[in-house]
Image 1: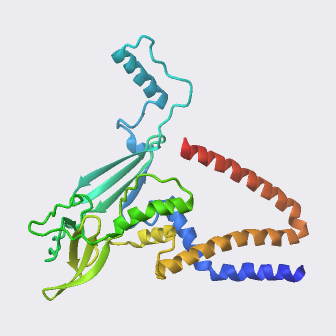
Image 2 (image 1 turned 90 degrees about the vertical axis):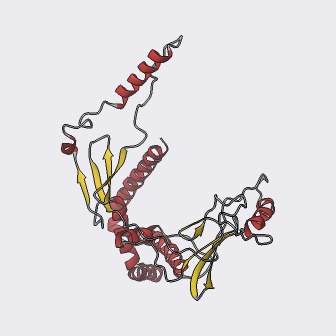
Length: 319
């Protein structure tokens, strides 16, 4: 038992050292999620009630007062045989925040206001200069948005480009999916029904045309083909803050072993190690007899608080 406890302590230590970068990453990104204004790469300001002084938001009527007013106006306008009355129960807003955007001076300003306590956040995002539309691929068929075929405009099979017909493959991917789903449902124990395929992966491939290399995109559902120059830069810029937050939420195994696949492995390992840290910590605590009583009290308080907070958060999220 002594040797087993020694192995547990060593595993606890070395796994912590091995996954130290990911523990720090999860801690930092969790903080960024919880504090949108912290280390923002966009100009951000928070404000309190004093900013609302002299505005219509300085003193809002309570939810109950507004509900009573709504019921009164319903009675005045509809004149029911039995007047409506405000029922017994909690009167509240269904969410805490009001949100607005302002377009001004080449930037978009976002304003978030907490209607309960009068605080809020203002953030500005510089407007991106309008880029020239990419050249149209000579092989393009169907309507495209930034080189990607539209999923709706060409769904009826009418080409959006005069003189060019949509490309229809024999037994396309979405038809294969539609035919296979009833068998999948039967073999997995789910009831059958009408099948509607809403989307399928688009096919991306290089095309040589007139001495230029294009990145073509084919939509098997619409038959549309679009393209952008192969050397065109992506329009989406990924700042460091957004990159960290997307790392925090990245999950799931892709179909091939790439960087995202190995990241998913780390997520699984991190989940397992966090559980191991907790369980091995309990074992190491129990081995120290002098701390058993106080530790047991702390664990009971922790379990009680976690259970109560869990029920409260469930009620808040479903209320």
